Image 1 (cartoon, helix red, strand yellow):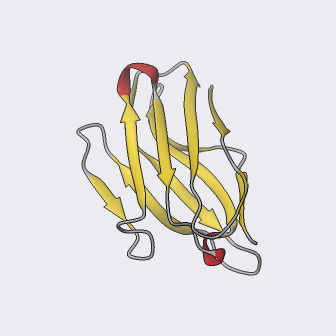
Image 2 (spheres, helix red, strand yellow; image 1 turned 120 degrees about the vertical axis):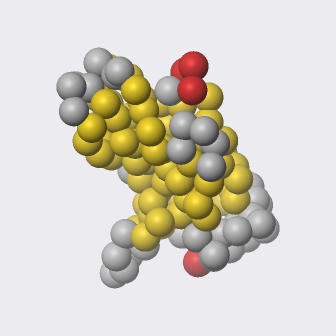
Image 3 (cartoon, rainbow, N blue to C red; image 1 turned 90 degrees about the horizontal axis):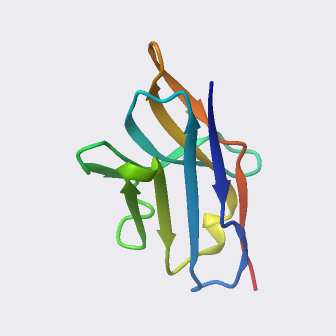
Length: 118
C-alpha cells in the first residue's frame, strides 16, 4: 500500500506565500508523475501542476509564474512553492502521484486547506 502525507497548508494574506509538501511512502517500486490538484467550494477538482520523474512540468495557466513545483526523487517527495497568493487560490489542495507497486495506479493525499484572505 502507498500513502501520501501532505503538509504546509494554512491561512495567508493576499500576496503572501505558502509551501506545501507531500511525501509518498509504502511499497513503492517507482513513481512517474507527482503533483497537485485543488478543489474550491462548489467547484470541480482542477489541475494545479504536475511534474514527471524527469522534471518536466505542466502548470495550469492560472498559477503560471506564481507557483513552482519541485521534486526530490530520493525522498519520494514533491513540493509546491506558492507565491503572490490570491483569494481565488483558496481551496483544498490534494497531492497526486502515479506509483508502481505491482501495477501502475494513482494515489491521492487527504488534502490540505489553503485559505487566502485578509
